[in-house]
Image 1 (spheres, helix red, strand yellow):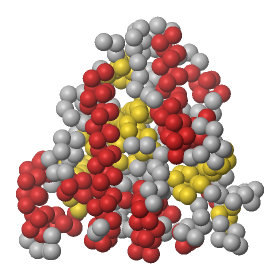
Image 2 (cartoon, helix red, strand yellow):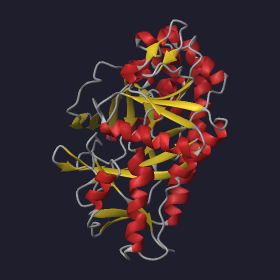
Image 3 (cartoon, helix red, strand yellow):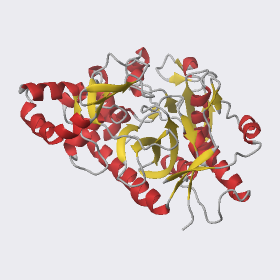
Image 4 (tube, one colour):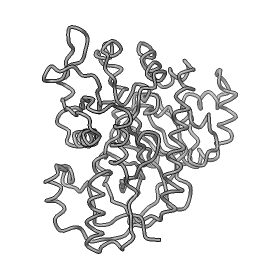
Length: 409
């Protein structure tokens, strides 16, 4: 894995405006940055990223059943008690999932380490699936990339196939996001584009314009009944909204399904470690309150947790990260080494939530920037990657998106 300086396409900004990529620059700084790209070998992509991501997703699905069988874990993940049946029923019905994104620390040498799973509302989809593919084709045609180069990017095609597999032809789907956010709209439009290519109807409606009929069904801004809704709005918020009381009786199929609330929660990390301790792609992780009880030698789970914690104590002391179970874009995250904070997020919006501890996996550095690999899951398999980098140890909402390519064999 290398970072290679490359010439920019001379007209890429004009092209970005033409295709609606209006947030390629944000707040006076580049978001999309093609002055360099990450080069990986085919083996690194297939063996170190693609296969582990697919296997981890299967493990996460196994964790869903484990969590649903434990009221204690549902409490730990702060799933509202009033809506636990909604979550459980969505799993029992096998309500379909479409996509998700694992975030990995990966240096091209050691096994990729799971940092978190954005299982419900991951963004950067358009950049990953479409704009970086166009970059690849343009640079290949211009001779900037060597003949035989490739890119791990079948995301759009996989989405089309997934929509076609899940929904009968001409099914009418609705897509929604909070208004006024270009990045969210780009993600929703990328999904709608795939749905239309799959032969489905795709209608967009701002989240704020969705209404409730007298019969208890959700309506779009043209008073059409919403039968299936892709919502770029997290379940952790939706389950706490007044509208949550109407979901069960609405006859509306939600995508992503309610059971994804269990996987988009950082509480998943200690659950995975409990179930698959020692897995090469996992980092030791614990609920913060369990660690406190284990150290003090008390609590119902103290013996079990204390043993697991003892096995990981040296690793955690060397470095660990504290994360709220509900947080986004690195907010309210702190990194500690030998008990001392070495970096923490300036955004503290999620500081009030319970926290997990996860062993610290330092991101590799390339020219002063630290990349995170986003491995996209479509259906139940990994379909491509996107890379974001930051000078900070904590990847944030304005971290740069970098294209990648696979070097010729």
